Image 1 (cartoon, rainbow, N blue to C red):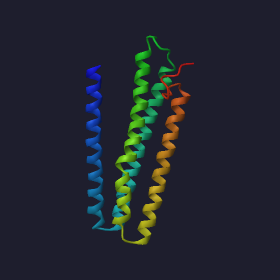
Image 2 (cartoon, rainbow, N blue to C red):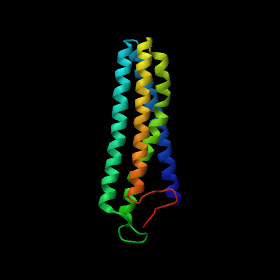
Image 3 (cartoon, rainbow, N blue to C red):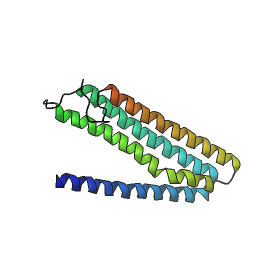
Image 4 (cartoon, helix red, strand yellow):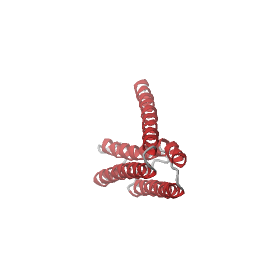
Length: 160
């Protein structure tokens, strides 16, 4: 029990450090590219949004593929360890999506201060709306697949 608590604490510390590192890296890249042009900042934001949302989509697909392979498992059955792997994959996808909200909120706000022209500001706002919409759609897809496969974790594992 103590080892599990220490593992979770160290994972949280590493996650916080990585979040801070990614946020600072994104802010630094935005600031450096803002000296070149507004279009460079917008291209960076577009690439980061596409890569981040593609990563979450890939994690969701992997979790769903494993959930289809394992199926729904009853507590105490020999396949329970495989079901725990499915839950872990869904949790990784969910944690990654949640981390993206935290990590990229500050660079999204900073983008409004770094661009100079009105056109670039409108494009930044449109890109921000598209990225938020994509994250919401992926979150809903994750919840739908988790419920569909029988791995909803609101109050523990739900078996039919």
